[in-house]
Image (cartoon, rainbow, N blue to C red):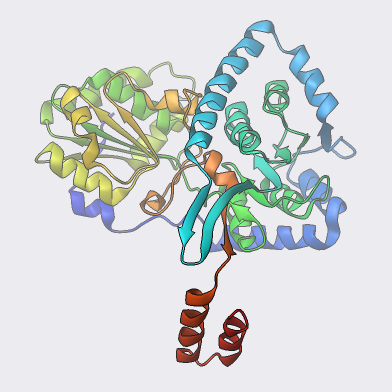
Length: 414
C-alpha cells in the first residue's frame, strides 16, 4: 500500500465543491415537497429511502429517549457521560469568553448582547456508521448557549443514538434522514420549526442545507472528511499510518494528505499502512479511500509544508514530531489542530472537548467549526442620551448620499 506522491502545485488544481448539481436538484425537490406536503411528505420520502417501514413511528419523544438511555448498559452510559462532560465543560469555557459589551460613544452608549437562537435542529448520520458522538457534539453546545428547543434527526436511530440525544438534552428525535429530515426540521413538520440546522451528513443533507440558506441558519456546507499530517523527521510512522487509516475508513471520498520532509519516513508510513490494513474490519473502505485520495508530498522543509497546509485549509491538521509542534503558530487555516505525536485526531472525534463538526473543502479559510458561539448572536444596541453631535453628522452624511428623509429624521433629535 503506497500513498500517491504528488508535487505541491497539483494539490491546488481544484477545490472540491461539497454540493454537486445532481445532489442540489434532488434535495431541493424533496425539501420543496416537504414544504408543501408537511409530515405526509416527510414520511413518503423516509419510506421511499428505507429510513422507515410503512406505518413505523417517526418521532421519539423525550420519554422514549429517556427509556432508551435507561436501557443502555452501565458501561455505555458511563462512557457517554464522560464524553458529554468534556464537551460541556469546553463549551462552558468558550461561553465565558463571549462577553457583553457596553462601549461609551459620543452622546451615549453602544454595545452588544450575546443571545441564543430559539430552536435548533441537529442532524446526526445513521447510515454506514451511526454517530451518537455527533448528537453530543451538536446538542450540548446548543444547550449551553441557551437554545430553548433542540430536536435531533437521525435515520434508523440506535439505542445509543437515542440515549445520547436524551443525555444531550434533546426535546425529541425524528427517525429519518436525508433531505427530507432537513426539510422536516426547517419547516417544523413534527416539532418547532428550526431557526438553525447543524450537524454533518451526506451530500444530499448538505445540498438540502444549501437550498435553505437564507431561510434558516446553518453551520457549514460539509464535504467529505479530510486530514493533513505534517511530519517532522522525528515523527512516528506507525502513529501516522493509524491516523491516516482512521480518517480513510470514514468514506471512500475521504481525503488524507501527508506532508513529510523525509523520504525514509514516507517509505515507513507506506509499510505501516500495508501492515495495519490487514485484518481491519473496515479495510475495504479504508483501502479504496487511500488508493483514490491518499496523497503524499515531499516538502523541502517544515516551513514549506505549513505553507502548503495553509493553502489547503484542511478540516483536520496534525503536526507530528516535536519540531513540528513547536511551529504551530505558523499554521493559520484548519478546522481542528492536533499537536504532537500523542494528539490523535480521533481524540477530537470522540469528545476530548473541542467539537468534531468542522469546516471542509478549504472553508476553514473563512469559518470555524461548530461551537457554543455558533448558536449565539452578538446583537448590538444604541442608547443615545445627547444626540447633538451624532445627529448633525448623520444628517450631513445622509445628504451626501441623497437621502433627505434620513437627514430630517436625524435632525428631529436636535
